[in-house]
Length: 109
Length: 119
Image 1 (cartoon, each protein chain N blue to C red):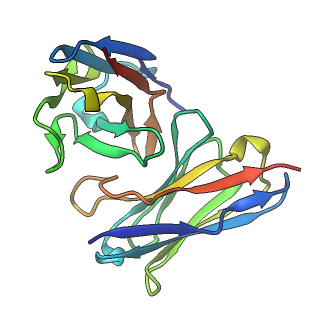
Image 2: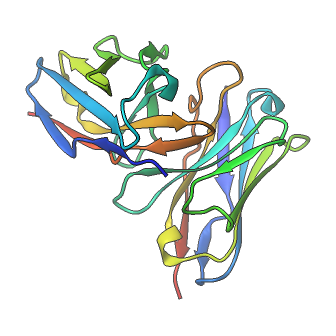
């Protein structure tokens, strides 16, 4: 089974910009992996922010955006807010199997 | 509105079985694929299994293949996960999540259900 890799932790200043990445052990991440991004805060279920690389749900704050960058999926947070401090997970599709990344702890400090 | 409510968790001995349920409401259950996702204490998310809307296909993570079975009863709007030969490493919070129906997966999640495998 493929392994999906993420940065373990990142720190961003309030109002700053940070980019999280999501790589695949099988090679470059493409739109065919339909990258998803989830936000999870302590004690809560995950919430989808981005699906199919760059699509947003109605509840996704405009400051979050998804893309493909250098062979990886990327989640960019522009104008970080204190409430964005959370764990962020990516997920990739491999045919019918889905695989989560290990998660990135984002600290807003 | 969409609601997913898991039930059936608890403490079980290694090697035993347990069946989880996820009751769905607020949408046409039979039109959507459904997922199980789990999270070990203090760890990340792990996708477990997917079943198609009509139950015709099932897919599993390597870690549970051959031990877990995902199923559904569309007449009861309920998703199931039968877990056999349980191991300590299966201890986790188990979430059900809605799949896609021509739209995005994972748009709605249950609150999670704790399963503890311990002697």
